[in-house]
Length: 496
Image 1 (cartoon, rainbow, N blue to C red):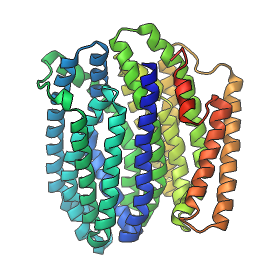
Image 2: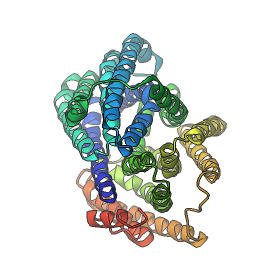
Image 3: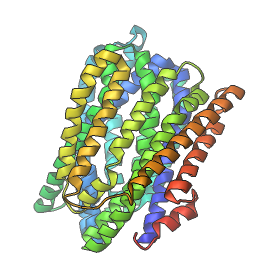
């Protein structure tokens, strides 16, 4: 199991890397094809899809947890029943989303402050995104089962294949078809991912059946509590784009979308590292290895917190030179907005190991209440700050909401795991100082590279500078050699 964890973390990180590289390549192509305003419309379209896809967000972790528990208990037939039940449930949700988007497409195109020349394409885009949503949900359901089975290599391979399909679709269709072409490219990506994941699950598909009523009630009850957190995530992240879209031009939404890509990328990478941890916790719970589960949590919780906060501080420092090297001048606002989103994302992600532990032991109630706390904090902070500072106020409010929610969550977590994640208070200050120093170094070196090299050419060098700063922090604070062998060594410690 220890070796499996290291391989799964590495595979999951590859999965996240494929998605990030795909976005880095695709966004300049999209902006060139449809302009910043067109990219703002595309951002709104994806936000609307995520609003509907939230129907499955609580169900996904529940499926992953129940599959992993069945694996830990040695019940392979139950895994097959969970897969078939998951696919049926996701097909129903996809059909609901498809109908909603097809019916609401004209209204959505008229709702936002869109340029007149883009409204016809926007209406087609919103309608066609319904088909994309249906495919995406089925692919997500199959992916959740793969995660529960700890088959993160297959998950990474299918995601990479889908990313390649999307890039080809963008290159071929975006210039000629505009926004509708982008929708087709996204649909091709989802179809490729779905087919790949079903192929990877062929052995489980041969065990047809559905779960019994008691298990269904357990899965639905578990997912219902997680749905509160999912709705809070949607409110805090995607509503930023929608609110700005209602009160500002599409170009401002485009700036927010570009800056938000880095916060999204950070969450994607962190989530990729966390997903195998969630599965291995649940397998240990299914095997009733309570002592092993507690040891794993104690070690990983400290590493997780130090890693997440260090990476966020360094990323915020490097964000402006990264965007400047990526897209050129004129995106300073995107960097500013993205920095606050990145820090807010880190505050939310800090709860990750605690959430994974609670899910593994079947106690997601604290996570659900945490979701309500961040929604309330967001309402209290974002509304006055939006009036005072516009789009900047919105992202500051989001950051503050997650920071307050994080503090509340950790206070409640001590009832379940009464341990301190850090060895001494001085460890925290050393980590913060190292992160600030590495972030300042990444900023200075990135600006120097951009002053010498043109946009596009400078990007890989600025990215290497940023990765170097992260590697330095990991070596100094985490004691981690930033290599696959270093990762395997870390995860193979006796406590893990």
